[in-house]
Length: 349
Image (cartoon, rainbow, N blue to C red; front, side, top):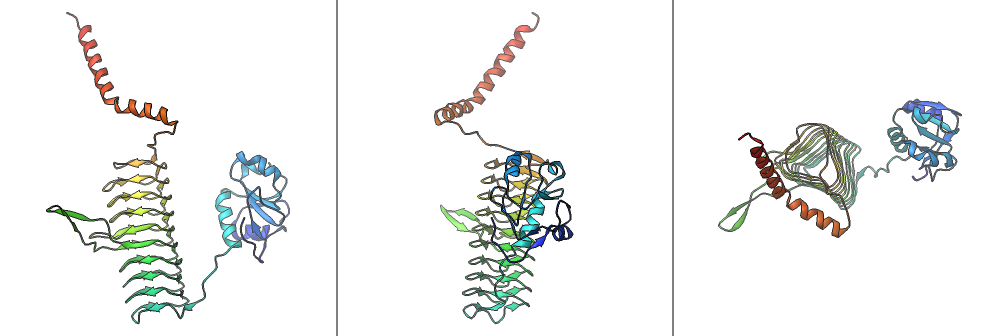
């Protein structure tokens, strides 16, 4: 359940803003949005599936957001729309707007004389803006952030506390970057020479488009020669690692703990489940869904859902099954030999 605010809206005001149709009392006022189970009077809830019919029957909410299929399953006042989940997101954002930092540069922040700061910018305590950094109008730089030399931060972008953006990286408009994220650290480039590793300088950048959200402690490495690119409206969860020279297509969403090796190219409108592992130097087509925990060692050229997860079982059973899998090649070879022998025996003498 979200935090209560003094501002409230009638159902008719909500539909005027976001569309949909009200069935029931349009004058009911809503000050908070909550789950089916937790909602009370004055609160709005939502339902996305008939699986939650029991919770819908028991809810104490004043009104509910639902689709046409479920419109006659309750006597509550209701907003009928095509996509209840998206409608809920819009109403929730309206009722609980994010807290904005005070405009201006905090006295305990460090701003280089050559940095440029737009109108309405907030810079929190102990943040540091290095030489040539450019912060566009309305951006917010949280406490303890480091913005490197010649970095560009787009208008309206929010850096939560303790974000690090290395030199020359570019972040587009209206972005959200959560605490602990590191943008532009060196990619993992090494060359072996005479038994020792030789570091390969990483001289590219990270270039991030507009409306991108990056979760806490996610790391995006700078390119070795070219740039690592995150296109518009990409959504990255917490603790993701993106290697150097990767490209993530627009509107792709990636869940937590995914690892993407260098030079992988992921298409538009992809969805990558948590803890998936993407090999480097491969390409994934647009509109691909990768299930959680899946290893992707080769390119995927066709849209669709891909899964490669060995199902969980009791440990002794898993060991037996894993042992069988190890011998699949031998079994295949024996079957082929038997088929060849059978074919030979069938030939007329």
